[in-house]
Image (cartoon, rainbow, N blue to C red):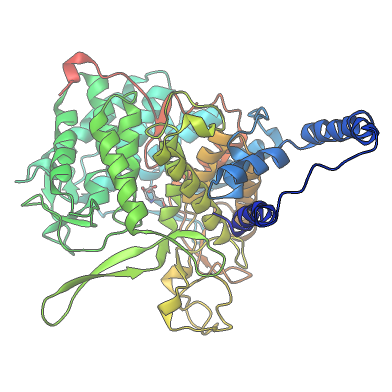
Length: 593
Ligand code: DMJ
């Protein structure tokens, strides 16, 4: 509850308490009743008129007051719940078109310098492949659906031609199973759907999936971290040979399930479904999932519990699997709801002074006597910023009393859990926006939040509620890893969902603010966009890399925020974790497992 709401409640209690302590006053006596009539006839009508006029000027004043009275956590929530303003979902054409121009700026540089290469380096104007065995279409395939959505027909035709004539998976090298699935398999499937079922993409997708399938041949059924696409064999992660990560094994499901639907071959579905069944049976006692599992035993291993790297999309896909099949698989609904309960109990915290909602991590530690404890670390990866939007989306699906809910949802349309998740989602998005309050207006890779026990006291170098570890110590040093912005999409992804679910223009404004910062600090004049080394440094120092998710996610979500909402309606599409849209479908009887 905001302090303002709290104070108002206190004040309200105070006013009722005072008269009760005194003898009740007799009703005011008047000589003739003229005073009462005067009030009713002369004073009351203008007051009512003022209230009506005020309501038409700004109904939120009243909605806020009602929300505060009902006791929601945030004034903001009150503004959204119960608003009767019709949301305006028509395109903001100048802004939408500016995003298209940005995409062209990025793509044309890649096409000019590096067409077909897996990755692009905009400062050296070069492309490189993930392995020395040759590329697998990482950037081209990750970009296809964005071009289709933006109507970039010529660029798309050339990219399709590259897929048709040059792309091959006959590469004798180790590729990351998860990354290949979300970017390449997901990109092919989405291109198949958005192109009106162009068979080229389904053939390529089936070829790729057949090569990935052998990674599931482990005692637990968990896929190994890497795969040799030419040899069709799973390969362990050389750094963690006994482990696989929860995000990586539980973020293949949307893609493999959709492929089963398209091909009628249930094998893909069965493999990824079995992974989820085993994970559910292995969850830790407090209902959380740690970042590593043992691929031999199928058990979680003692490792960090968090919502960022190696865990993020595990949570994202719990919800999205439920959404993908028209909300009939209660297995996923329950798993998702349990996970959100556990997150609220264990990881969601409020900052010390301004009560910003953020997520922390739990790090396991054993002392000399082998006694285990969990250390709470107030560290939030940029990656976690997907969670705000995801919680809001969850609130309107697993947390809805009836569906579809209004836009924005009314309080009585959500369950208690739905209201909680909606509030947390909005608050987390606000926090993610706070982490954009840097010299560049871009958020760092990792933010730390101040806690009372951090031993930093009232250090003037850290005046706010959050900081970038090590970043402000020595300006001549190479900035720490935490200070980078590598063109990540997560905050923008949440803004997209929040805008679609509320129609609140503020989310478009925030998205535009981030886009302007990207333009100001990451744009390379000769073409492309680069990561920057320190979000708190102007002019920015650039790093020679444009991640493929700039084309597949960051610019796509920006485009969708400013496009008309009839483009990819959320009730018809679920976006994979790389922002590749896949249609929501009913499970055909032959695929019911
Ligand atoms: C993307 O590849 C995906 O969104 C993934 O789930 C996490 N990280 C990147 C973007 O930051």
